[in-house]
Image (tube, rainbow, N blue to C red; front, side):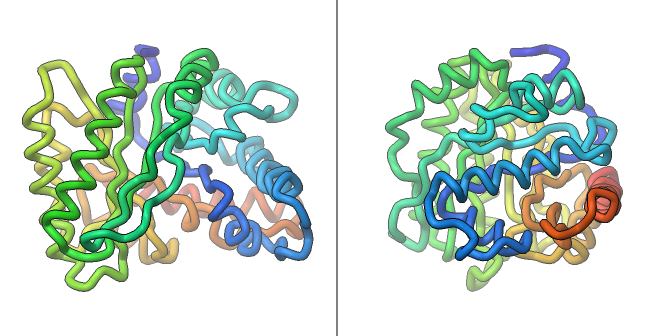
Length: 295
């Protein structure tokens, strides 16, 4: 593991940009960017367009390591280039931004109020490529729809099982058991999740650290026991469908919790903007998220 990157993630001031939309979420991301579904007729073309959007983002002067600590990439983005340079190398060498890659293969059907991750049949080969390219860590997402204790325990067990395999490869796992912002009694689900995560963290051996990516909590500073846990490198928050303004307002109330936003980060960006307009809007979004992340 790269020690300089570890130091950045452990104590740097800033946030993580989430640019890891996959096949299922790319059409929505493109639509929000101003590119309708009838603008492409194949998956290949769709991924070309989403990469053009990401390349524009990452090559923007506003997108830099002075406020952005890390970036989570989609597998295809990791395998492509930015301005003719390998994406992972570009992020670290040109921007001083720590690279992560999304490794899950989507969600299973709902069971006990949650969606586990589908079996990761490509994990070994993906981790091989990530290590070869110099990726620092990974991210994998599960989804909690209801405050179901059995379901939440199953989610956490699965996240830690895969997290262990990833850590064995020398990569930093980000565990992302997302609680839906539409969850009935979300506060209860948040609390159940914190308890389940803390129990598993307590079992980790000394010297082992993971990262956590969690939904912005209904109760301020609910994640403090996780943030302070010796087995946790950093806790980051997803925007989960909240607007940029609402996300930053909630985030700022939660001390030492930093952002890992996707939709909120790209809010208001459009394919038809001039580069100057695009850069100015992105700079404004980044400054808002950064300010909320350093409280």
